[in-house]
Length: 116
Ligand code: HEC
Ligand code: HEC
Ligand code: HEC
Image 1 (tube, rainbow, N blue to C red):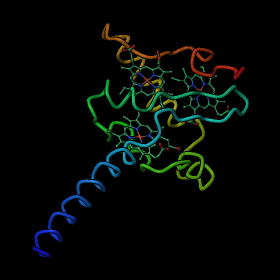
Image 2 (cartoon, rainbow, N blue to C red; image 1 turned 180 degrees about the vertical axis):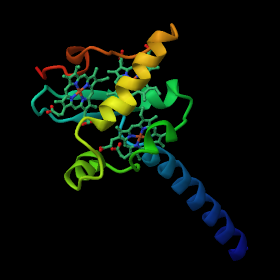
Image 3 (cartoon, helix red, strand yellow; image 1 turned 180 degrees about the horizontal axis):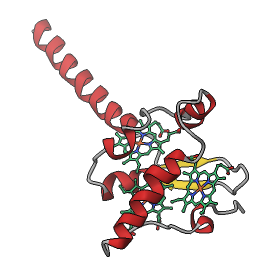
């Protein structure tokens, strides 16, 4: 009997941690890139995950899944300023537009939007 309860508890714990882990691993719904010379960018992270059919490596081959890592890598000289913007955001949006597919913005002020 005790053994059964222990097994049941273990399954519950595993299931519970699984659910929490999935929610965490997806990261933030929206990522904010703080304003610099240009106004801030609000990046709809989960929306991209869905539209790109959960191909995480499309972006995360350039930087790991870690909050604030782009800024950190720019500081360490591992990424150039605007490299993610040019090689990921703009590259994909322009490429899809050329192919006649739905795409995100390609003009500066459509992405860099002044916060109210
Ligand atoms: C279109 C690009 C893109 C795709 C695709 C993408 N991510 Fe991200 N992800 C980002 C950016 C940008 C950040 C923010 C990094 C930073 O803060 O410097 C990020 C950060 C994260 C973080 C760190 C926490 C956070 O939200 O800041 C996690 C976890 C994460 N992503 C998980 C995933 C998973 C899982 C997938 C696939 C299902 C995925 N990402 C797909 C761009 C992307
Ligand atoms: C698709 C969205 C998008 C578009 C369009 C875009 N940017 Fe960006 N931009 C970003 C993101 C995301 C970052 C932060 C990541 C990085 O540095 O690669 C950034 C960073 C920057 C930075 C460095 C941070 C700062 O504010 O000083 C500058 C400068 C910049 N962009 C200028 C421009 C200019 C000029 C254009 C138009 C030619 C433009 N951006 C178009 C998304 C965009
Ligand atoms: C591999 C392709 C790809 C990459 C990389 C990518 N995007 Fe997008 N983006 C899309 C697609 C697809 C859409 C949605 C088009 C639609 O269905 O309306 C989109 C839409 C958007 C929108 C509009 C959201 C809305 O509510 O209309 C913004 C803003 C945006 N992207 C910003 C970014 C930024 C910032 C980055 C880089 C950190 C980025 N994207 C990287 C493919 C990409």
